[in-house]
Image 1 (cartoon, rainbow, N blue to C red):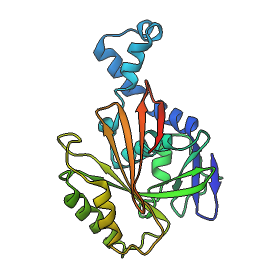
Image 2 (image 1 turned 180 degrees about the horizontal axis):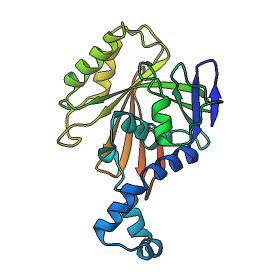
Image 3 (image 1 turned 45 degrees about the horizontal axis):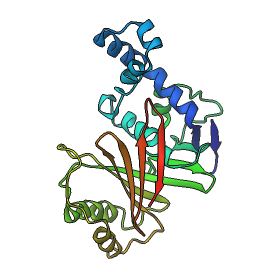
Length: 238
């Protein structure tokens, strides 16, 4: 765990963060194993059954908004970056990670600053990229999604500072719609965003791929194939 004093951010490596999540979810995993009637010996001997249990820990099972955002930062976004990248969070003003222990998921949740425009950041070889996360549950049309994005950007006076806008699509009826990404890009450019940021769309594609599409300033798509357990495999950018 590293500390960026200038930004008052704590950064965790992927392995460290995954272990934190898994430890916090041990009870849920136990209950799922019992519900399916699997013994410990069966789970240990049959990797397919083990992955079936682990894959059941998803966003819908998380207890609150903070856990969901942490889950998205780790399992739905960090995988798009090179191995060795860290996920970072702005801390409350009265938290000093050099004095206040942060070793569990609850300790991390209780340490994160709620009013910060940055929900999380990714530290990679290319530097630090900060994200403001918004969830979209509306109609999947170009116009409806644009109205949502425009409203969020205007809320910040068209200036999000150093935070990129990350929109997670979570429609009630699945990801089926009619969105023209190039048209959306043109519309967003007309907003007149004052800060040097990206607008990024993220969604799950039939539980097979995670799709991340940058729609501003340019259109760039990245599809990542889901593998068993918590791992992700990137298919690259297009």
